Image (cartoon, rainbow, N blue to C red; front, side):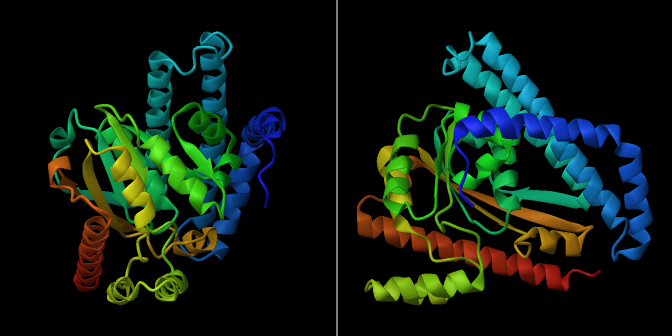
Length: 339
């Protein structure tokens, strides 16, 4: 579905979400009764009530954030000072609060725990970062940005899919910060925007990229391997065939980020636990999740990053193989863990 123009999203979609939130809150007792009545007839524990609560929190947060963004717009002189460091800082504080509240609500309702392994946040202090993360499931971007903002005190810059602008609060908030939205089928433009965003990172910035380019599925893995072979990259295709839990990484974006920010340390991030949930139907079927999400961070100082296209491609594949092995180890531990 094509994204509507900005004026429509601001003048129609955003007010509609606020109005919907008001209607839902006004009729909340009826929704609670309906959800409670439906729960005994659905598999899982209080599944309808859990989903109703998450939907309510999301709607309320959308409306509250839109209100806060309106106040910031007015306080900035009707938008004139939005790009100043003070107002950029205030917007990142709003991002952190928004993610903390959503994370707390979703984690409680879905019975989620997150375990993080890797260097202490102090090791990242006062260093610009390039963050290369595995892409597996709709929850990974949320968890990663939440961790960067609220645990590592970072101001992330991200190239995002333009469909995220359907959420009015995220649309306004993320467009006011140094992020870029890219539609499907714009590979050349994507590389250009990666270079733009990764330029001039300061001590608390973190540029985030997902080298796979999309969520993992077996169909995409096989298609990626076939694409490598069709372009004559037989060695990369063979290495990709040995990796079972990740897509073949795309070196172009990684190379663009490294070229734009040679002074930045590199952080590799892997996670496992929600990577079998791809759609809303998957999440509905699994509720409550009763699971632990494992995250692993590795830091590579800028001085240890290799130079040259061939060396960086080989380095990227070495790390992707390491991430694949880590995910495999987490899966084995989950199978062995007593229920």
